[in-house]
Amino acid sequence: MTLPTDTAETNATLATSGTASQAPAPTNFIRQIIDEDLRTGKNGTRVATRFPPEPNGYLHIGHAKSICLNFGIARDYKGTCNLRMDDTNPTKEDVEYVESIMKDVEWLGFKWAGMYYASDYFEKLYDYAVQLIKLGKAYVCSLTAEQIREYRGTLTQPGRESPYRNRSVEENLELFARMRKGEFPDGTHVLRAKIDMASPNINLRDPALYRIRHAHHHRTGDRWCIYPMYDYAHCISDMLEGITHSICTLEFEDHRPLYDWCLETLKTPCHPQQIEFSRLNLTYTVMSKRKLLELVQKKIVQGWDDPRMPTILGFRRRGYTPESIRDFCDRIGVTKKENVIDVAQLEACIREDLDRRAPRALAVLRPLKVVIENYPEGQVEEFDGPNHTQKPELGTRKVPFSRELYIEREDFMEEPTKGFFRLAPGKEVRLRFAYFVKCTGVVKDPATGEVTELRCTYDPETRGTNPPDGRKVKGTIHWVSAQHSVPAEVRLYDRLFVKENPEDDTIANLNPKSFEIIKDARVERNLASAKPEERYQFERQGYFVADMKDCAPGRLVFNRTVTLRDSWAKEAGK
Image (cartoon, rainbow, N blue to C red; front, top):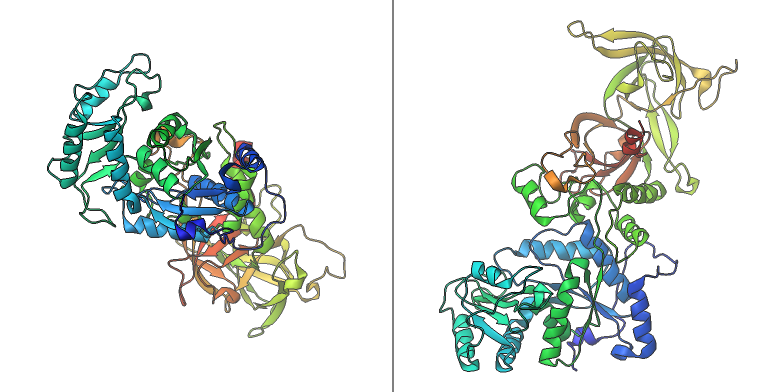
């Protein structure tokens, strides 16, 4: 068969961002099938896959698994992988979603061999449907949608044949042509395959192939008012693109006989093999597009790119790296068995990735002012802070130190509890990179009694070392210079749901502490020029990213990607 030019090109470029892993590709049952096909010479030793999302929403982490699987197979077998928009339902699809899907795939580090749309094939899909009618394998049915459901039967009872099932070929051709011309309103007719109303597989009980839908299409405009059903369009599209292995999730396993029936009945020049794998299910996460859309429409989240959303764009805005998501998809593997993956595994991947790559910085989220009374007024000195504690080759940055500092409010306790080794009246701690300081007094708001300022002294002989008298401290806390630090807005994100499986009642299981804005945080001056999507480890705080939308010169906005440790595991262990 003749393939589209860019699809037929061998060894299409499939680039990944970052440093490519040298580890061998993990084996799984899909790769074993492909290995056997290559051994026997099936498909002329070609490997061609595709990722075919419907552009009716933003991609989520479950789609990332499919993207990594399809593009990864094509890369490792020196094959091709197409990106194809399944745009067969114009009432739900939009150019916005098309563009977002393309950006997500590219951001994950992959490049498609060919960019296609199911709508590219509307004319051919129509012609193949006419062939089915001429073969006596399809008919126009005039039952209502409710009647069709009633006639279909149940899992234990066979269906009944439609009274329109035995229309002549000529009548069916005429009706189908009139459907295309727009002579009938929505819902009056459908084109159905003529298979077996008694089949134990309900998907083979004369499934619909075409329905009437008078709706404007984002690419074809108003040229069509009949649109193919997914099961029909998908297998034909795969065939037309020369796909060898059509990889999809397990919910389509029962649809495979229909996939094969269409291609076998039409005697197409090639027959892709559909292979199913288990979809990705994550704890504390909702994957249903309908439920995610509900969160957006009800403004429970701030949009599809809300950093709490499981969308790829949401993860990107939260500070996840494409490498961490690809690593996660590799770790969880590919199986036939449905299971639920602990979201902590995904969080572990981003912690490990950012621990390797994120430069270190000092940031005080809830500032408490400290005045070092015996430090000379107007004096400023600088300390060398390592840009990465495990990578000395990355050098250092200058961290200014002055008489007035900010420390984290939670690093002070007026009446310390047992085991509290940070700052308290009469207690001494080390300031990171700097000196020992001792709290000598507090200043309180007379109206509320809240501590607003600490008075301290410092030991000038403790710069980067212990004092000559050998005394030691148990606590080291971070700080920023009040004079030199810069203000920042910090957004603390956490899991959106409090229940491991929130699908049953999404709204009731929302986490009321999933989002907090801190408007008066202070960060070291080296972050003043932070650019959107630059990532940092705020020492003792977690990993943060400059917000890709709101961070701009003169306005620093950081999103917490993940804490330094799994705080949810700690809570579960209580």
